[in-house]
Length: 466
Image (cartoon, rainbow, N blue to C red; front, side, top):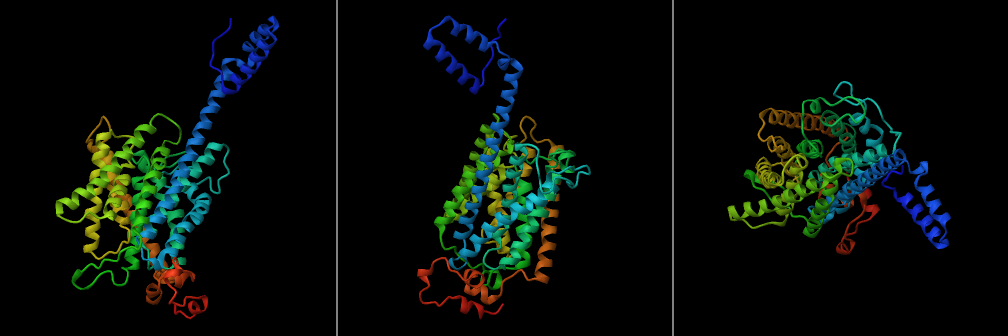
């Protein structure tokens, strides 16, 4: 008896070609051959099921690698936002840091970070296998690629906060340590392991779907530690707590960077499904609503305080909303995603103002946007968990994870930055800072047509005092 089955694309093509040939000859033998084709073992149900399984794996790989490309695009967004927020004399330096974050971070994470984060984790604390990954399946390679983009993002967060006064080489060393140690260790607690075992925070039920804490708070708290060691830019703060504004040279770059980051976030959150499934729609809808609400929160705060509405506040409000929803985008309903995004924008604004009162100089408000809003979003993921709202046991676990994240990322980076500062020196000299890091570090300028009266050359650079 002939069974009706669903045919694969290749089999349908074969069927069409054979059927056309049969009709062309218009012979009875053609129909006999067609019947034989349909009943051949190649069309058996188990073969079709195997083909369907392979097709699903292929679709998952395609989605994951596409999402990885979207997350990679976020590096461009960070580069534009950070460059636009700094003075023109530091443009090349900021761009090069973002570029080399990806270059160095990719290799370090493949060699060490992936194994620490996702290797066999029998203890619940660290992965101990799959360093220098040689995988058995294409999907494992796709997973490595996707997670590699996350690691580069965590390191880049510190770049903007440290801009305009950090030594180039010292910064790159710190970036490597964040990518290879600080980020993957906490990631192993919250997400590991991919192969065997489980992180101790994950065992307790800690919720961080796409990395409000694992990626963003880690990067934000690491940035806080680094800028405390660095100190503020020269002239940023005056006597009696006065805050002197140092505007960036190109707000258009800031807006462009904000849009690129927003776009890339659909891969950041949607790709964290690690496969093509129906949950992506809700995840990316929640992402969009939280971002929009975060941007509007900046408008509402400015209106309530009678202040002018600044484009930088709107962009950072959007980013705070995106950071906030990243932990709970898969476990919230849309109304709570909107609430999370709006309140994350408020948290960013309050935390940024508090840092200024403490005379902590964060060029792009990375600590407030990624560190504080990431912690808030992680808490919201527990508070607004779908169909189980305000579960105090879950909220306690979220608070525990937030505290551990801060302790490890801030404390660990503070120690590393202090050691680098005492041995190599983390901060550029006053002369280098005044001249601009583009010239003093790289012997280049971003806008040479504006420097025709200044004799910048390799020869004059060699005479600068370190």
